[in-house]
Image (cartoon, rainbow, N blue to C red; front, side, top):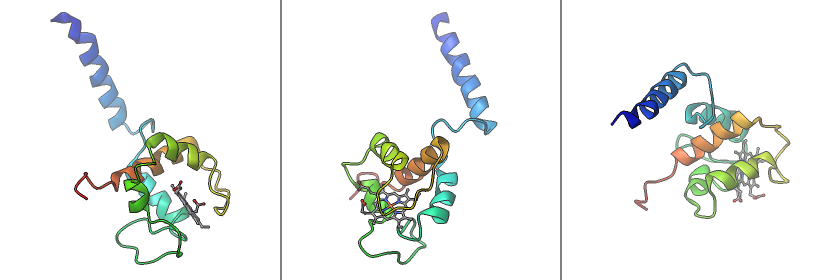
Length: 111
Ligand code: HEC
């Protein structure tokens, strides 16, 4: 099946580019974790190592497991954040990273 060759080449090139660390298209969860600790941890519990944050602010695990929140709604929300949140002027790649991190906290349907 020679028809599959272009696709395989495309995948190979994509993997190569991803491994070069250039593009952030899909979001980098590790970078998102770092950004969350820096910018979100004042108010949100952003990982298991963190004991407490503000009361009445949903921890990131709760956000990750909320059915109402999708990759898209999270991205839209972070581009135009909640009123109580300081204007952080997140770039699109920062948003993608943070969303990737939050989604990595999703429990695999076990709960
Ligand atoms: C100054 C405190 C504060 C900071 C800093 C903050 N948040 Fe929030 N966040 C809140 C509060 C309070 C709520 C719940 C009330 C609301 O939705 O407005 C919330 C809710 C959310 C929600 C849930 C929205 C929903 O529809 O359920 C998300 C997602 C979120 N924050 C992401 C973030 C991210 C990502 C950061 C870091 C870039 C961040 N927040 C930084 C206070 C903060």
